[in-house]
Length: 302
Image (cartoon, rainbow, N blue to C red; front, side, top):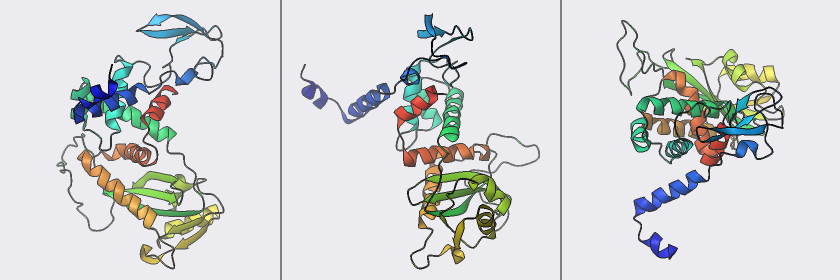
């Protein structure tokens, strides 16, 4: 077969689809046992094969007397869909511009409700496994704000606000969810919703405590909350009035991250505040790794 000739006959969209299928097939569903088979319940390393269930190999552990598959104790364990469907979902989700829920559901043949649930199952894994950076050296920290949203929730007596609306109050208020972002010059990152309105020292501590090396230099604007935190953690701090650069010391990295995150969020047509930490994890993964095979393996590894 003349493979080069065959590829030349494909259209651009067909070539793109072929590349997607090849990269999806590279996702390894046996990663969990690549260093030896073990029971996910009791960690015994001598389980035996015991039949097939739903076209998947089943194992039996003589130690805890439990049966399991390679997907035990993961979000893929009780799925009724083929694993290949999950692979395609992940691939669509982590394209350069994520496809909307409706488009993904039509493309892979699942309901919109299932597509929504899968999105947040995957993002919960990212939030738990990919948001644990430690920072060092020069660390920039600053907060940004996104208008609070209760999208999908009907509250009696309160009229819904359209996506893209504005706050009823001027300046920073309790109507705005505050996101604290800290980033060092090696692009290690911590980002989390700390609460609502103006930040305080009590808000900074849960987000950054024990996440910044003691020998680091923390650069912030003039907010007193960071000064309290630096004293609490015994970290050197330099505050820039109004956040403006002074003598080569700047906050450009963290401010740029804020801007890019908000631009990326525009494509989702409004996100409920309760899911905002998941979207912070999603964006961080996209910027730092964006490896679908790595993500799929993390889903398998529980």
